[in-house]
Image 1 (cartoon, rainbow, N blue to C red):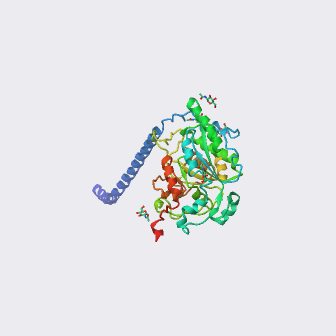
Image 2 (image 1 turned 90 degrees about the vertical axis):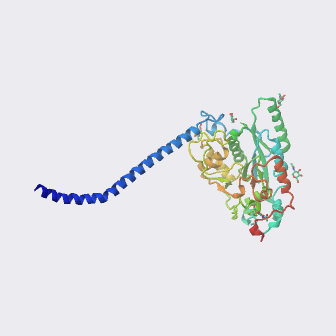
Image 3 (image 1 turned 120 degrees about the vertical axis):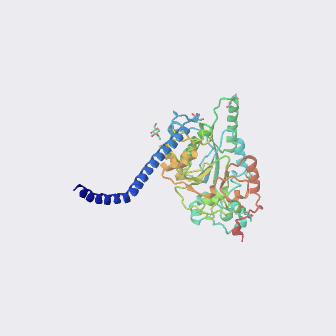
Length: 413
Ligand SMILES: *[C@@H]1O[C@H](CO)[C@@H](O)[C@H](O)[C@H]1NC(C)=O
Ligand SMILES: *[C@@H]1O[C@H](CO)[C@@H](O)[C@H](O)[C@H]1NC(C)=O
Ligand SMILES: *[C@@H]1O[C@H](CO)[C@@H](O)[C@H](O)[C@H]1NC(C)=O
Ligand SMILES: *[C@@H]1O[C@H](CO)[C@@H](O)[C@H](O)[C@H]1NC(C)=O
Ligand SMILES: *[C@@H]1O[C@H](CO)[C@@H](O)[C@H](O)[C@H]1NC(C)=O
């Protein structure tokens, strides 16, 4: 009986066994696989935790001026209602201005201001008629200004065709020095004299340091919003080591395109779009997916307490960006409810823009390239880190209209 039973069971067991034998590797494999995945996820989790932690300690060093306790609320630094300006140009924004260029300068930046005044900043001389002279040999390879935009902005323009002139104003925005040494006092007197002579200085009441640039940019928005909303169409912010190709910028604002040149074809897009929007314009060199800098020695180091996220929103390079006047107002208003960071371009064109639902747009004409090839100056709207001798040399080349820079090879034939 027993053996029979065993026999019977044996075949059942055997049958089960064979099933098991067949299934075992699969089950084992599956189990192993799941354990592997779990282990992998577990490890990755800890790796990420670790990286995050590293990031945190790495961005844990405080800034020497914007320390942990320092308020990041704009209203602790800027008064929206009081006029805190120390010097304002006479008749600032009283007349119709198509383009107001505000150059972020500094108390001791006289030489740079003078270089700009005598080169690209001389907009009586360096205005739209220069566009045709610069690009005369490439006529036909760029689109002229749009009729609709010429009509729209007719209040800001005089003349027509190649004598068309736009109203452009250049203003230098500076803060004040700590005013503790006689040398500072001296520069204060100099600034007054300079302001009187050139009538292009806007001085505000804040201490002018690199880490205070956010205050400078917001104060620029404040003045433009308060004084220029009715009189001005476009606001352009740049640094005092930026070369601004004003004729190209005007061509762009008026809806035309700038011809392509061989020396900049690597940086510019072959499909240059023209500006069509008249409202909500915010355009420059756009950075996407950039991350806070961990390196404490970097000029752009960002401590965690100031910006506790791992990426920045899209923003435009502070070297030069263009805003339509309504965008100035929207950014300025949004800034009050945006927690400050000391990097002005990220704060204004990134975080405040996000708050204002304004989208930064990229144009390759605003590239941040640095080149010694002067021909590429003709192809762009801005050039970064050009000052002193290089600016003068570039200018000389630039205004020698017999210098014909080559278009891209493919257009030559
Ligand atoms: C600007 O250009 C005009 C015309 O070329 C010239 O008379 C004037 O002196 C220039 N201004 C400066 C500050 O260089
Ligand atoms: C500082 O400037 C004021 C005028 O603004 C002048 O009266 C005073 O003598 C100056 N002081 C020094 C130490 O240069
Ligand atoms: C920035 O400006 C504010 C207001 O003038 C001043 O209190 C602060 O010390 C300045 N910060 C730096 C780093 O200079
Ligand atoms: C255009 O640029 C390329 C490289 O940048 C160069 O090899 C070529 O000779 C240039 N052509 C002209 C017409 O300057
Ligand atoms: C800044 O402070 C003011 C009042 O002191 C407050 O209304 C505002 O919401 C604050 N802004 C931010 C971004 O916290």
